[in-house]
Length: 79
Image 1 (tube, helix red, strand yellow):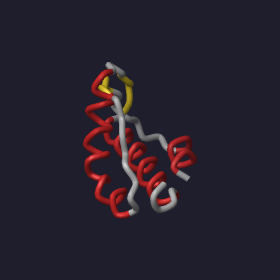
Image 2 (image 1 turned 30 degrees about the horizontal axis):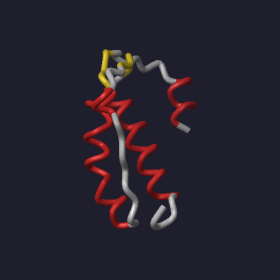
Image 3 (image 1 turned 90 degrees about the vertical axis):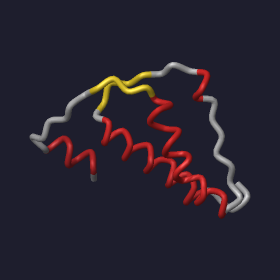
Image 4 (image 1 turned 180 degrees about the vertical axis):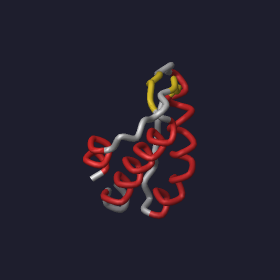
């Protein structure tokens, strides 16, 4: 649905260089409580990497939050 909206939209997005760990780690910290309720541990090694993307920051945040939320939602308890 989002893809269709973006493809048909005339809206433009400001692209910026974003370091992925600065975008992902706060979201992991935000959603860690939800994961803990299902005895799921979210781990990463993002501190050791310098990974950058050129993207709209709010769109990137929304995508990452959605991916992690769905991973928690659809992973079985103790998964």
